[in-house]
Length: 305
Picture 1: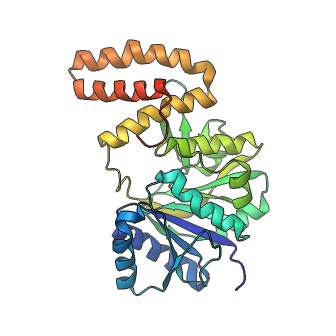
Picture 2: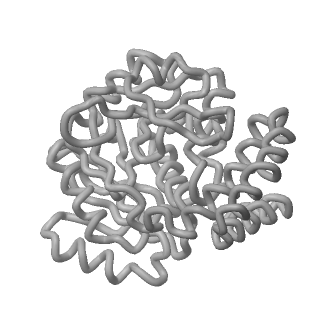
Picture 3: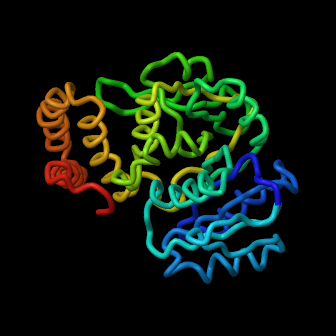
């Protein structure tokens, strides 16, 4: 079969029905030529649920062995079973490496809690082909009337992120980043950047990957004509302790790696502001979580916790 122009990667972790909905939305827009890879994280525990959902869906699908190489026929969903939970970065890197090894020029990484509502990978591939100086592309995010965020910007005051409402604003801001929920790039760029940084495991890996792409001398941009709705944190839980821990720990690793000159000031801010704020407000559980994240960073305990 001819090599597809774009491979679409959708990572599942214990959410087969949500992933199936995402796959259906992609196939509806992409048509019969779609090259969709369903990457099943923690497949040692969840493969039966994933294959059951696909079998009941009526969609054509096949189980792939990334070590053997090869892609499914056009329009057939390729299921890749990853025995352990490798996190967002590690799971998607399995798919990126397979696409690169098979000669697929472009990859579109989509969260499984998204639905493609407008546009397709063709618009993204056309934009990327026209502008080789751009290494990473985002899309519009959200449903209903706009404006729709196209990515985010890191705020140096506390290294939190705020959304960016236009592709132009994202492209011109040196602190902008492309959201990992919808990220389009050349597979050769992913390889040159060293793949998505796996030591973050969960959260801040899209910021880190954006900065790795920038280190290659490439810019970032977005295509507003492609829009996905993002349901948000289905697998990890919105504002759950898991989310809070990885966000706080990985924020420290991000600052240390890409903004080391600002680390002392952020440490002082943490000790003088965050700790006191939690103590005075009586938020002892949140303080304990903050402290655990800080200690994990100080130990260099990256990756899964």
